[in-house]
Amino acid sequence: MKPVNPDTAAAPLNLRDRLVQYALLTRLHRPIGILLLLWPTLWALWIAAEGMPDLLILFVFVAGVALMRSAGCAINDFADRDIDGHVSRTRDRPLASRRISGREAVGVTVALSLTAFALVLLMNPLTIALSVVALALAVSYPFMKRFHHLPQVHLGAAFGWAVPMAFAAQTGAFPPPLAWLLFLATILWTTAYDTMYAMVDRPDDLKIGVKSSAILFGEADRLIIGILQALTLVALALVGLQAGLGGFFYLGLGIAALLALYQQYLIHGRDPRGCFQAFLNNNWFGLAIFAGIIGAYLFGAG
Image (tube, rainbow, N blue to C red; front, side, top):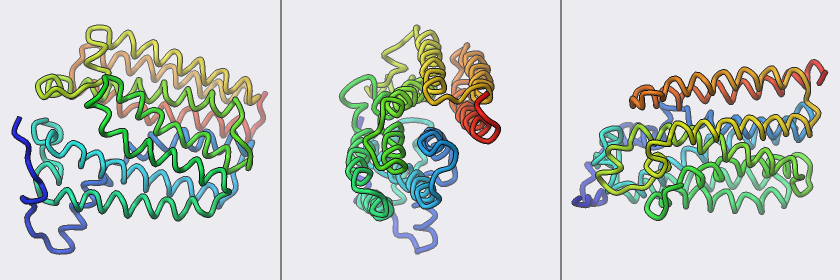
């Protein structure tokens, strides 16, 4: 595989076209990543606040989710700048197709991360301290596929770190065991759905030597995804029990379980389109859990 140097190949663009490329770089046209990061953040904020988080905290975390997911996409494409051109799904990305340079991608990452950090500075010192870990997880994740077969777990930790941060911001105290249980549930869920996503790229990843959970799991991929989904549901059920959420929450959890079964149906034949649809369907899984939490606090836990 011959490496490409995007820094020397980027074509000159006017300001409007360059901004369009930056939007494509940060996947603003594909907000599924923002939503998948947003759901556990909202779960945590509502549970930590027992029904309704502080509006400033809510704004900071929602904006931070959008900013950090966008920054994560930019640094991911920088890390994969010599790989994406060899993968059918990613070869047309701005950096892989050399419409922008690697320096620009790094610049976008830094600008978005600094903006997110400026928002975090409105929070308490503990939340600010925890945000340093969040940044380290987000920046290091794209490089993990070169070192081990479980970058999906690393992504789960990066996405899930919003949970202890949300508890710290809302309560002003170190996150309780409930927060870490929800953090674990997020890691399990993210690993499951990102393995579905990795199944789409598995043929290309095998050719170019990139590691993923889909490659590690091999023929056991559907079984292990099912186990991860089941463990996610169990962890979320325990969260509901500890938080005293009750019936409405478990109704949402039941709907999420049905969606997990549907996702198993979609990945049954390992068809890339079905695997990608299963990945996308997790947006509804996250919404079902959040709706259950909202219902529990609006109408009572009974």
